[in-house]
Image 1 (cartoon, helix red, strand yellow):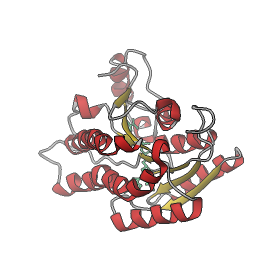
Image 2 (image 1 turned 90 degrees about the vertical axis):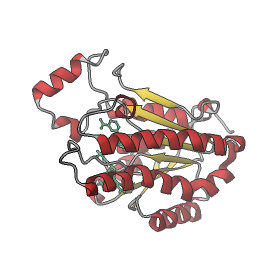
Image 3 (image 1 turned 180 degrees about the horizontal axis):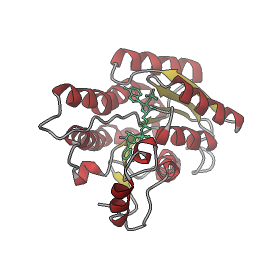
Image 4 (image 1 turned 45 degrees about the horizontal axis):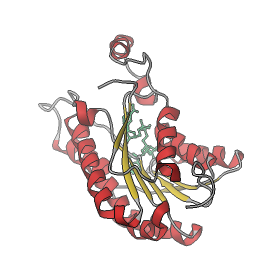
Length: 252
Ligand code: NDP
């Protein structure tokens, strides 16, 4: 442990899916706390370059890298490159995620498989590739996985997505047990409905009904999620592991 327990100076962070939305906010937040950030994207090069530019303009260190998290070999190559270039890897944020919503009668098997490949297998791929460098990071080592309120609640039309997020939570608890003795913490953050391109598209009446169910009366912001991820990444959260932290304005 080093310096202020609330800072991340000298730490190296890998954030998957940093080209927009929640992942972009997480990359910015970690970099603002002093971490050097590698942020990945699959196809959204423009967004990833925008994240990198915003961090650099604020005086931080960032690098955007193309990497499909469902491809283990590509993930291993990225982790190797990160360690070679930046001297190690301390913090991993598994944020990359997709949806392919449909009621089960109409959902195709490919829609199940593609969501599993990115959300669940992708998270496992990154954890597997990062495990060795994280062991070297010892007490600074952090894995933070993005789950969702729907893992606990269920959601019609999201049988594939909700199943992957339930899996991510079980993976989180298992890795916390494997890695805890080495000082590495593994936690998940489960956002509720967050203002992103996805929720912008909701029809007004759906949005109004949703707001009625959220005790704090608003959708979350990407910063609401990013600040909790940042906290979990710091030494201040060293004694929290195997937990799923809801960030949902009271919706459940
Ligand atoms: P977005 O759709 O805005 O962004 C998804 C990010 O993931 C993009 O950067 C995208 O890259 C990247 N990505 C997608 N598939 C892959 C892949 N196979 N390999 C690498 N990168 C990939 O998502 P959100 O910001 O809305 O969500 C982020 C996380 O938070 C997800 O895990 C989601 O499930 C979770 N979440 C979101 C909620 C919300 O209300 N928005 C609520 C609860 C949970 P590219 O630009 O290249 O496509």
